[in-house]
Image 1 (cartoon, rainbow, N blue to C red):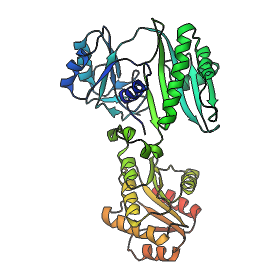
Image 2: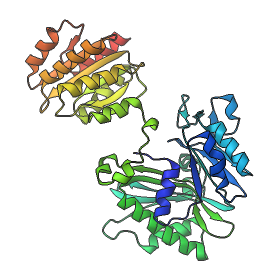
Image 3: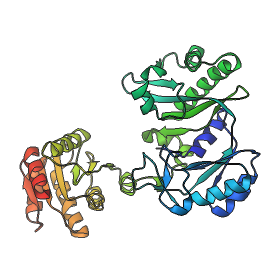
Image 4: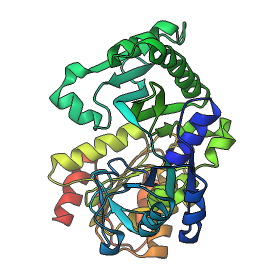
Amino acid sequence: MNIHEYQAKALLRSYGAPVSDGRIVMKAEEAKSAAGELDGPVWVVKAQIHAGGRGKGHFAEPDAGEKGGVRIAMSASEAAEEAKKMLGRTLITHQTGPAGKQVGRVYIEDGAEIESEFYLALLVDRVTSRVSFVCSTEGGMDIEEVAAATPEKILSFAVDPAAGYQAYHGRRVGFALGLTGPAMKQCVKLMGTLYKMFMEKDMEMLEINPLILTKAGDLKCLDAKIGFDGNAMYRHADIAELRDESEEDPKELAASKYDLNYIALDGEIGCMVNGAGLAMATMDIIKLYGSEPANFLDVGGGATTEKVTEAFKIITSDPNVKGILVNIFGGIMRCDVIAEGVVTAVKEVGLKVPLVVRLEGTNVEEGKAIINNSGLNVIAADDLKDGAEKIVAAVK
């Protein structure tokens, strides 16, 4: 689960991390009073969307101006005008894709006098099964670009969970960033604060880009991007309340309400599968036979007819889907339940694209009988290879 920058900074502030003072604006008429509450003399106006590259992005609407999603203003009134230009407009960045995202919130904050910019992140390292620090002197840039062009400028190291954060971890970051004196002491303290917050709030990723050294010699978190482990949200009601559903894919949001594991992709063949491993194998074999999957969808081992029906509706709501492959191996899941769900869904939403169904396992004969006696125009498959070949051929 991701949150907005202004929410991330509020969380950082609550732990004592240094951030600039700012105000969130959701309505154009609130912009002037919000900007007036800040001291200036420089104001920074930032579009709030769940995507990076805002400063280098552009708006789809001409009346939003030619500047990107991060703008500098020299007065409160100018900051308010820039906020008004952004609200309700569509911001396009390299992470949003050409469709962009609509800006429903704008964050206005005090500017900062920057001496140096750094990159800093904490993340779950799947290789070491530990939390890792990643830092670089190349702040303000995409870390992927730094890794490709100058990998020697990136320091990454994991923290042993048995010992936890120690002062030498912070010094290691400080040395890599070239900090000395008071700034080094601030770095040791800040790294400890960030690690504590990361662990206590079940984060998956905490990115500060840039972390800056001000002209006065102080460290400050100038930007913040935080992602949480969605499976841990039952432990954090305060964090769960920060969820902005308007930033999420409507299909993925609908799937989560029915406890379905759904991820939208860019292909043309919708997949309904039980079990994550089988779902991944299904996507692989679709690619092998010359097409692309439109989604990852695991209905789980204990799906009901209602869940299967909803899963089918979600798949068919994607206009990119040109065909559907249902691939079920019934262990815990019963094939007849899947079949009933598919029949119910097709009768409710209709079937406008080819549908291939492969069933195997528990109650497979009952499931096939339900499909065969439904009167639906369904293509039966004997195994995974047969199912993939048939759906790709039907779509092509």
